[in-house]
Image (cartoon, rainbow, N blue to C red; front, side, top):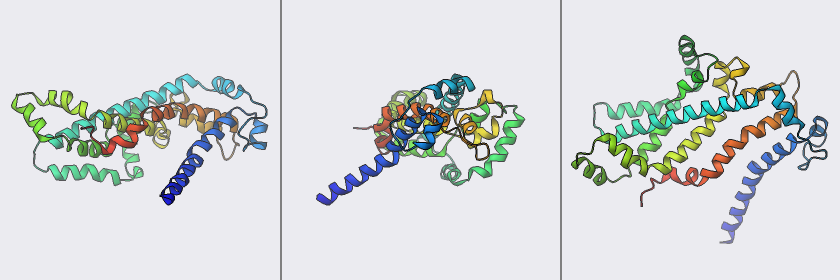
Length: 271
């Protein structure tokens, strides 16, 4: 028992040091002057606290517009992945058709395809559609995710067949079975997977860098690059201020839905 307690304490300390402390230092440095950020970087409490970094940041970039771009893109991607994942998983769960296993394995195989392989073809398609410098061009190739299909399918498989069969005997159409029976049962998984999709999309950097060239269409991760440069130097306090703003919404989402994120993927919500 003592060993278990000691192991738990070690894991807890590692979690705090690995996640909480860096966030605290990031927030602290966002309230420091440029000089203090380099001379007292490791001081958790600013010697000369100031909010000028946030005021200057708001003057230099359209902070509200960039936040909206990021939120809009992440929301579209999340909704798209949830819809395609749920509908595809329900089709695999409820219908029998030729090549079902092969098609499912093809979906799963896409997880192992490196992004660099599909990056150029996706870029050419988005360019032909005229969606460069457009948030929709960032979202469109990301509207389907095999991970969501796998998670939802495994969760749907835990739904008793008798429940679905009883609904079909009562001549309830598949559309109503899906929305009135399956979706409510899968609500915990939908919330957890949706939160993960949103946070990942919110922090997306590489693909938006290829599509978005106009600063007015930038997302927050792209704007952060303006303050981090290996050649021109780094404005550390401004970078930390923007980073703090970037972290706030995903952190709130995680704190609200953490129990779903940690538990619901392995549980269908069935009693």
